[in-house]
Image (cartoon, rainbow, N blue to C red; front, top):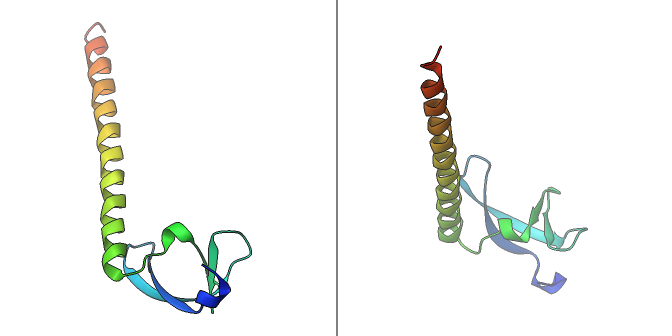
Length: 90
């Protein structure tokens, strides 16, 4: 994207995962970043062309987070079982 493609609208996910439409007005100082009129910068991977794509990306991120949590829970259960096994000797 070049300066000629700006300003343009894009969609982002807020920290609470609500989709929000923003207007990009200039290229950021670092490569791959874009800036809004308020000075907020967004990296290319945080920008989506439509609300639908922003929501789909949010679901993918949540699926990844859920998978990570499940793996951690499995590890905790295994550690608890090991401690329980070895506590029987006491």
